[in-house]
Length: 193
Length: 165
Image 1: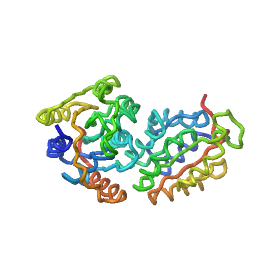
Image 2: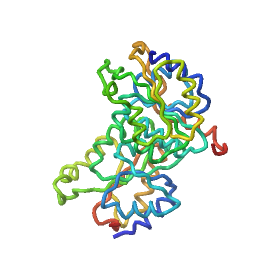
Image 3: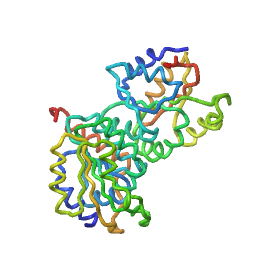
Image 4: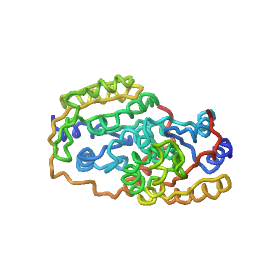
């Protein structure tokens, strides 16, 4: 499955969850398929989508938080997997699109061809971990993990086949911050999950 | 010497309500106070830049975060400060211990101790040096920048706070 196809499966499943996007094609693809105010597009600071997502999840326990991460980002910040497992936010789903390369910078190989990131997450202590390789598997796996008491980890193996012409996020970083915070504030006052 | 408890209380009074970091002996008393207080939680990050990310997420979710760290972690944080906090206007109060101040410390701290202020300044990170007689002013200055959406660093030299070990 191509990364683009994985996004086509995931995006319709989102409601009003805050979604923290890793830098690179993950931001660009998601932005171009369907921009949402609750999307935090991390254009720089590689490796930090997971810790940003953890911070959001810890401070917003009454709603689900989703991290859309990449293999390069996860490998850069493997220690954050330990932070997530230790903090154990029930409301966090960590999705990793794993194409085994640094695609935005020219398809240089990452280590995830030989390092099973789902096993790493399991070893770190995520209570629920799934790996999918076919697009039909995404929806049931997503729904199952969203129904669990997390943190949960969904590894989606994809081919490195993003469209190179996919545009960059056009919002300024400041706009991304303010609309994301506004989207979160609009969901205030809900009862615990 | 100043009391970690008094300073922690002052942080709460100023509205700070999320704490994370990587420890330093110079901050050990302050971290202990934060850990022992049920009203404040301190989360131990694995590395300083991961704490920057964590604090950024907390801010986005409506908290006012404080990052506690040693200056040895500044290098790890520069990319996060410049490509996240500064351009997204995501503030954080950084309480950074100043190892190597005045060239007197273990060898690994000497170079960073000499350049940490220059690095902060070059990166466009507002900062000041905390002392026993400028708590209020320093925290007010920090709050001013934070209200503008900017990070602010308070450098803490050896002996300012009681050490908790």
